[in-house]
Each structure stands twice: as C-alpha cells, then as structure tokens.
Image (tube, rainbow, N blue to C red; front, side, top):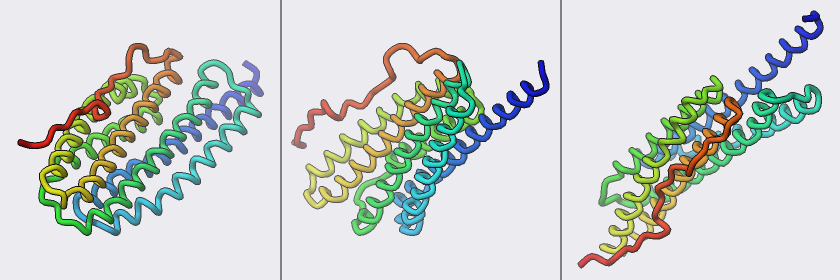
Length: 239
C-alpha cells in the first residue's frame, strides 16, 4: 500500500476515534445530568437541580460541535460502507442525547416545585426507575465508544423493564390523587417526571438501534420491546 494512502487511512481512523470520543463526552455529561436529577427529586437537592440545567448548555454546544465535525468529515473524506454508517450514525446519536439532556433538565425543574410539598408516600419506585434508566444510558454510551453491537442489543431488550416500572408508577400516582385531592399537584409533577424518565429510556433504545446498525450493517428486526400501556389504562375510583 502506498505511503500516502496509509497516511490518509490512518488520519481518517483518528478522525473516527475523535468523533467517538466527542459522543462519549456528550453521553457522560447527559448520564451525570440524570444522576443529578434523581438526587434532586429524592433528596430535595436544589443545587443538584441547578447543575442539571447548567449542564444542558454544554450538551447543546457539543451537539453543534459534533454536527460540524460530521459535515466536515462527509465533505472532505466522502466515507463509504461501514465508515459512512458510523459518521451518519453520529448525527442520530447526538440528537437522541440532546433530547435526553432536555428531559433531565425538565425533571430537575419539576423537582424544585416538588420540594415545596410534603410527600406522604414513598418515591422508591421512581428512584429505581431513574437508576435503571441511568444504567441503560451508561451501557449504551459504552457501546458507542466501543462500537459494541452486543451491548446495544442488551439495552434494546431492557426497555421493557423501564416501561413496566412506568406503568406501575402511573397507576400508583393516579390512585393517590383519587384518594386525596391535596395530592393532585405533586402527583401531577411526579407523573411528568416518570414520563420523562420513560422517554429517556426510549431514546436510549433509539441509540441502541443506531449503534447496532452502524456496527453490523443490519437493522434490529422484530417489534421493539415496548410495554407502556398508560395510554390505555382504565382507572377506577377506590371503593
């Protein structure tokens, strides 16, 4: 292989590594946002909530940087096959990460309202859901950095558990609201928080599908594991 060709290939490999590093950095910030948002809810930590909102600007800035990097790479390198899939996938992945950051910021803002209310019921299930979503996000960020299709598949399959938790929280909060009208405001905010966490899980699943296709060239076949039934829930008043 000519020396000039080797140099071009090595240079492009370095650019792909840089692209993965940028996505991993963005993913790490978003993962930390979720952890801080969970702390803000469970521990009534207003400082943690403020940090989540502040970090959202860094996420947005990284998304813009990655978009510019991808456009430049496409224009100058004109990648093909697997390389092209990796570069294009970066745009989809960063779009999902940006939305996850937005959902985390929304959770943090709602935690500030919740801090004004006494909680006459446990938030253990919500905490468990937040930890599961955070773990799935960590796994998929690792999959992005490692170009690991198996980890992507693991996250894709685990979204059903997130949905099951959401369904349980949804029914529990509706029951609390029906039992005591004073619970309506805090429970409404908690419903939105739970839905935001469920949507974060969906975006992690989106990333899993993108990573799997970028690495293998094959889309994940079959119906996406999905268990959110809240839109069809029938809630009856307590006897």
